[in-house]
Amino acid sequence: MSIILENITYVYMPKTPYEKSAIKEINIEIKPGEFVGIIGHTGSGKSTLLQHLNGLLKPTTGTVTVDGQDIHAKNQDAKHAKRSVGMVFQYPEHQLFEETVYADIAFGPRNLGIEESEIDQRVKRAMDFVGLDYERFANRTPFQLSGGQMRRVAIAGVIALEPRYLILDEPSAGLDPQGRDEIFGQIIKMYQATGITVVLVSHNMEDIARMANRLIVMNAGQVMLDGLPVDIFRDCQEQLQKAGVDVPPLTVLMNKFKQRDLSVDHTVVTMDAAVDSVLAAVRRS
Amino acid sequence: MLADIMLGQYFPGNSVIHHLDPRTKIISTILLISSIFLAENYQAYSVVVVFIGFCIALGGIPLVMIFRSLKPLWLIIILTLLIHIFTTTGIIIYTLGPLTVTQEGLRLGFLMSIRLVFLIIVSSLLTFTTSPVALTDGIERLLKPFKAIGLPAHELAMMMTIALRFIPTLLEETDRIMKAQMARGADFTSGNILRRARNMIPLLVPLFISAFRRADDLATAMEARCYRGGDHRTRMKQLKITGKDWTAYAILLLVIGILLVVRIYVK
Image (cartoon, rainbow over all chains, first blue to last red; front, side, top):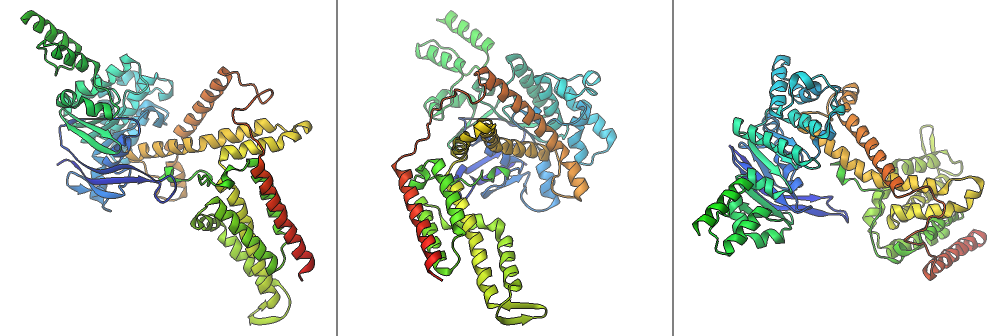
């Protein structure tokens, strides 16, 4: 029971002068309950990789199986398998189109042919997850909301499909720090409450360090590193630099302390934990 | 999906033809297209074939691309051929019910459809070897003299440039919104026409909103940089007629001369 990518290669615009292979021979397995962070430089193939997870792109070679089902088979099972993977694109608020917030969130479940009473429940649950008050927002037009609120409506639209895997492509892009914290807070809350599998793409290493329990680093269309975030931040700084991504500033600082023989815990990812660790180390020495 | 669509048919390259001034290429294309009408017999046609072949080879355009450019118009070409074959009067060589095939018809049909092929290939050569931006630049310069009679040359060219610039952007946007809605179970491919049109709403509404937003942003950005139309604007990349262009004109005039001679003396 997991998403398995086997030997995935995808070529954009084959047989033209613009031909370019976006990802090459990707082999990964995303297991249930994981919180996978994917990072990589612009053009490293992150978005292309994501679109293979729910069959929006068909790989040039290789197979994608979701819970044991090949999603490019031509049958109902494949359709169902695809539906268990929910996808939140970059700037998801650009996909809003309905007259009310309620109708927009209900669009997905309606397409699945779910009963109205159940849809009602799902919309309420989804709005609750993204922290939008049902009474206040359900009947408003989404286009008059703030950017952060619109994005939450769009994310709710995907959550209402109740997928087993939730894929988010840069969910915090273009939001102010407060909006970013809110979105991430809600994703973590949902991850902890439902045990949903999350795949999150982000430029921001700090976010990934704080949330993900597995980190995949993409470079030039291939998986460069795959493992625990703390291990990768500690052991693979050179490779990270080569991939064009920065180690979180906090980790850099802690590593510097360590080089100066201050016995701090360099695996901490939050500011509070870092402060505690430094204080403890200073007291000890 | 949609992102695979090629914009125009520009085929990036580094050939002499690619480096000609766009004005030269536009004028030459017009001249060549008109002179193709001078050709009326097989001898003249072979001159045209040789010259077009020469241009294709010089531009380094793969023949596959040339044939691909003919594809959308093959129906018209075949139709031209058939109409001429069956409607020309002359020496009958075959009868099929009310339809008669004549010797003159065969000849005329063949020449006419080949002429069409020539026209398509010549105009494709222009778009194969000239990037859309260079093309609009050239058009703007060529239209400049008509400003005196009130033709807004710069504005037209600017509109064309912006439109061209945003085709790939909007295609990408369409692709993304389509995928996002498909991921929410939207279906764009099945059902009857009415149903399908209704199913397009989740795609069209966001697309229009985004197009207006982009237009607004672009207008603001242009105003912020003090854009106020074409007067007194200078260019970073000046168009310059060089020796290459004069050589191109000379070769073209030579070919047109040959075509004229063939038309007058070869019967």
